[in-house]
Length: 203
Image (cartoon, rainbow, N blue to C red; front, side):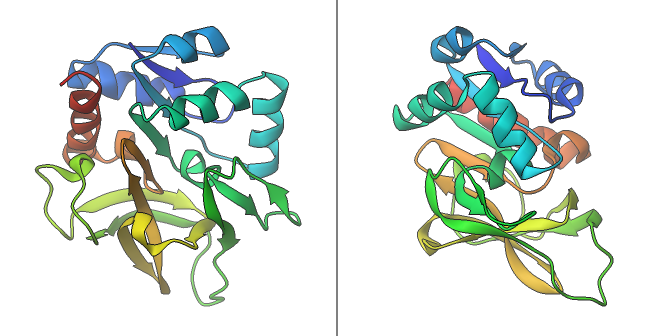
């Protein structure tokens, strides 16, 4: 079973519908026990970093998420679900993250750009990853965000995108994949990402 984590910060229904459309069963849950039993884990999310961490803590979901990742089982983070994997965010001062990876989350500073970065943009694939199977370099995906991650370890960077500057738009490490863009809003190419993740969970 693929578990989609409900911590009050995401468009969970559209993510759930995308997995259904791709032919993979998924369950929206706030249960730590369900997370531990899951074959694959998805952490979507939009909104404030601090509120997200508070919600995860209040629901006692931080430990099961970290343990799931440490076991090397298939994990997919979407938007805020990517940002939370880092040490912290500068949003509203310094906010602590899950610290799976070293690095921080920062705001776009280019004043001539419209913030948030919203709409379709391309990704440049930096390293082969199973999550990109069947996708062309330069494929368009849908973005909605004002902050982006700055990983300390370049090895985890799977794709970048240009918006005023080149930023990390996807990371990959073992069976962990996380995306700044929204595959569930990205039509055919987004559905391919969902299918690729589903095939990692159920080979």
